[in-house]
Amino acid sequence: MRTSQCFLLAGLVALALAGVARVVGLSPQEPTLEGTVNIDYGRPVPLDGAAQKQLNARDASFGGACGEHRRVVKMPEYAPLLDAVASTRCRRSSVGARTITSYRFETAGELAALYGVFRRSQLGAKGGCDGSTGISSWAKRDGELAGKILCYYGSGADFVVLWTEDATKTLHIAKGRDTAELLEWWQRAVRPQKQYPSKAERDLLDLIRPRVDAKTCSRDDSGGSPMARAAIKCRAVGTRDSAGVFFELHTPGNLDRYLSDLFADPSLQDIAQVDAPCRSRSLQRGSWQTPGRGTRGTLACFPRGARVLIWTIDAAGLYGYLEGEGLTTPNRLYGIWKERLRGIGS
Picture 1 (cartoon, one colour):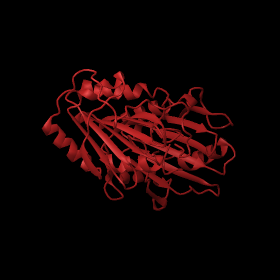
Picture 2 (tube, helix red, strand yellow; picture 1 turned 90 degrees about the horizontal axis):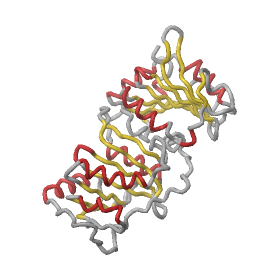
Picture 3 (tube, rainbow, N blue to C red; picture 1 turned 90 degrees about the vertical axis):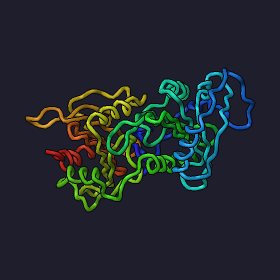
C-alpha cells in the first residue's frame, strides 16, 4: 500500500505493503514511440501551436529536457494517439521519472479513448495504485477529483505511472526504474504539499489526538494513496512489538471511492464478511461499530508477510493502516487497535 512503508493494498501498495510482488502476466503492448514508421491509421489531427506551447510549459514543470514529440503508432489499437493536438517528450536524469510523454486532446472523449487503450491492456491491474500495480482515481490535495491513474510494469525494467488531467484533457506517461521512487516523485510533482504540517495534516493530527502522540508523527513521504488529502506516519503506538501506524485523511466521498478501488484487488475477493474480523489467522474484512453509534467504518486484516490491519472512520474520512512485522497473528494487531486506536474520533 505504501511506497515508504516498504505510494498491500495497491499492490497491497501502493490506494499497502511496499514489497508488493510484480503482477504476473502484465506486460502491455505499449506503442513504440521512437524509431518506427508512422503507419497511416487515419489522418493525424494537425498539431495546435497554442496547445503545444501550453503542454511544453506543463511538462517543463516536471523538470528535464522537453521537446515536441512525434505521434507515432505501431498497432491499430493505438490510433487514438493520432487525435492528439499536442505531444511532448521529456527526459530527466534526477530521481523518479526517467522519461515523461504527454498528449493533449481537444475533447474529453478523445482523452478517454486513449486512456481506455492502456486500461484494457491492464485488466489484471487492481488495487489502489499507491504501492505497486493498480488503477485508481486521483485527487488534488483539496479533495477535488482530477483524473485517473494507472500503474503497471512496462517493457524491460521500467515501471510506469500513467495519469490523466481531465481539466486540460491531457494524458501523461512517466517511466522509471525504481517503483517507490517513481510513485514518490509523482506525488511531489503532481500533488505537491505545503511545508509540514499543512492545513490538512493539522486536521489529521487533531483527529488522532489524544490516542496518538503527535510528536511521534511526521509526513509520509510516499504521499499516501492517490486521493489522500494528507498522509502521516507515526511511531509504534505504545507497544513493544514492531508496529507502526499510518493515517490518511480523505473527503468522505473519495474514501469510499478509494476503498472500492482497493478491494477490487483479485487477491481480496474471497474475504469473509464477518462481524468481528481480525481474530483468526484467516484473511478477513468486515465493518466495525461502537455501542450506540452503529457502524463506523471498514475493518480488515491481512495476515501474510508483515501483518496488516486497516480501518476507516467513514464520517471523518479517516483511513488507518497498522502494520507489525513481529506479530504472529492478526489478533495481536487487533488488540493494539482495539486498546489504543479504536477510540479515535470518539
